[in-house]
Length: 124
Length: 152
Image (tube, rainbow over all chains, first blue to last red; front, side, top):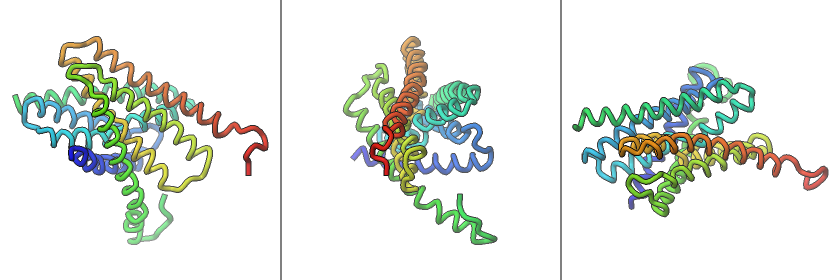
């Protein structure tokens, strides 16, 4: 029944990504894919925190499947990120395409480190 | 975009218009994430090992996204819920950015900087190559039909 935790988490995470993307686009426009950037960084932060909590022994396997594999996994996306990067490159804005890859990777990795550091501070 | 609705009717009609899309994204996302979880069970990554399974999940998901975008934006007019279900939902839920970022961190934590840096660079390079190549292949297969062949 482990897959049910993944399914439940993802059925919240994926629509949350869609609604966040719409809200961010309504506020900041569609020239740069800030919506996907936002969910990818936020999801990496939460998953980093969860991984740290799991390492500290305070997050069980069910919670990891629900919030990690399911919610954070579906909240974040690589396919839309790649597709939006290709769209930027094809429309001639190579600078934006490169910035999207570098900024998303750097910010996502930074968020994962920050989440893990936060977990280390909360559950030493 | 929702139609021009004056006054108080707008928020409710916007919600009504969004509800099927949100449901399609939720259903697709659940299916995609469950498929990703299944892939990690079939091809488990040993503790401290190189996360090949998630790398392949992301690369395959990016290639399929390239095909889907060509199919629904350049090839055919499809059902309005097809792209939210398959793209935002299934492929969005199948692929993951957070697991990639946290696995890179984990490799650094395990004092394995070389695999960490390799995984850090290999994922965007292969994923972008996959979406680019799949988009080009889909355009060739779907859009560049021989003259008169199969056209209605």
